[in-house]
Length: 279
Image 1 (cartoon, rainbow, N blue to C red):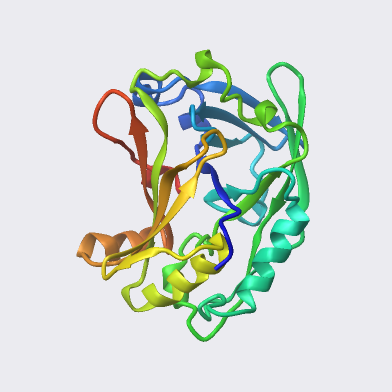
Image 2 (cartoon, one colour):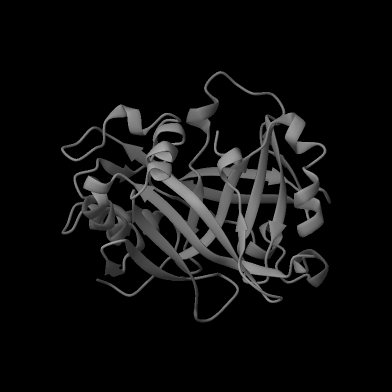
């Protein structure tokens, strides 16, 4: 495979209005949270948990929830590429890889042309980006509909900055990145898949990431970098369902992100309970 061109960007966690304001006390006790602002169009807003490694968690909430809200969301987590790679070039690479071996694993995934997005932050600064979102089709190895109770979110989206990245992700500000829990970045993102589709999803993510994983029977591990560090700093795991709890998760939340582990400078890794924020 070609040399790695993608980085961990952020996770999008959905909060109801009641969860969002005020945020749960366990979040405020463990993290420094900053106001991200209101998205272009005024329908949604966010708060951010920003880490030293340049990744972040987006706490997302609708101000006015439209009927087609699921279609408006790009996915559950984002990867990115850094300058000079554009959103258009990134999409071209991925689409080409998905048409070659190992392709999309016959899961039925390609990527749409980039579309612009933005928000105005709490200081009134306009922040702009381009989103490259997955487009899903029914294919030979696509799991049955029962594995997508929230719709399909089994592939990441890509977020490419048009304005300087440090405007969107203020990881250069110690007052923003110092957290009571000591967390410094994303250590592991886990994607849970049906056991009989493990090979197919490993092939899909190999094409998306542009690098081969370290594989065992229980996982395929992709080593990834974060935008704020020079070396590999985290990983993306594709894991086949192995327990009743896994099968229950797939039935309730569907194929996709199932666990998030954060790196801590003060002790053991911090497991962020994401299930409540996958809507």
